[in-house]
Each structure stands twice: as C-alpha cells, then as structure tokens.
Length: 168
Image (cartoon, rainbow, N blue to C red):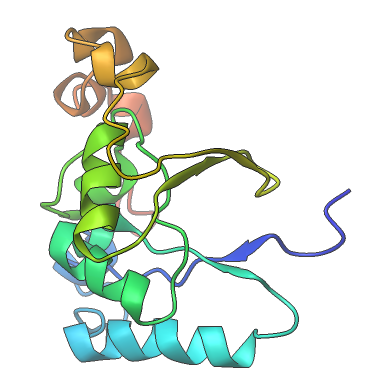
C-alpha cells in the first residue's frame, strides 16, 4: 500500500529510568547519543535515504523543542505528532513533555522559517498553514486533558510494569 517505507525515525536512547541502564542489566550500556550525535544521525539519514525514504521524522518527546527545531534544519522534515499522554519516553525518563498542541508545533516551525503543514499517515498534505493562519482546531481547543488519562495513573497499574526476568 505504501510502496515501501514512508519515513525513517532515528530514536535516541533515553536512559534515565530505563531499567536496562538504571540497573546495568547488560555490560556497556551507555546514556545515548550526544546532541552532536543526534544532529549528525538525522543529517546522515537524509543523505543516505535521499532517493529511497522521503521523510525523516524526529522525536520532540526525546529531544525537546529547541533540538527538534535544529533537527528540522539538519535533515528532518517531519516534526512527528502532537501525541496524547505519551508514556514510553516519559517512563524512560524523558523530560520534554507528553503533549504539544498543534498550534505550538506550527509556531516552532515558523520560528525557523518553515511552513507548517498537517499530513495524514501516508504523508499526503491535508492542510498548509500559511503565514497569519493562527486558527485553532480540534486539539488546540481541548482544555481538559484528563480524558486522555495520565502517566501518573498508568504507572500505578502493575500489569504494565517492567519485570526483570532474572528476579523472582
């Protein structure tokens, strides 16, 4: 259906609360890449996948807002999603948040001279947000995020907790 891969997403290792790092479950586990490593990974991905994968997505949840803006200038062309109650990176120790409103993503893109656009899963552009288009839609209007649940609620559920297979 897609004709191949639609995007490549280089993900840096968030180590802070990752059990394999925190408890040194394997020898030689490191903290993840430096800022320079992350920038170079995205830039090299753009060069290497030039004719085969059109879209390089970065993870604002792992890298934060300012680094994400840099990544858009170093090879990435996709900011990723707004995400609701993101828990994977958060549970590993990422400190960059669980949600960004669409209007904030558009603001960050404009700050670096990009024209923000909304796309679907197949990377078809649904809407371009030209300069001056500050409309609020859908997720921008939500005031009660509790409907999405919370990370605090999620971590109370033992069913989803990591269980070290070496411990009984």
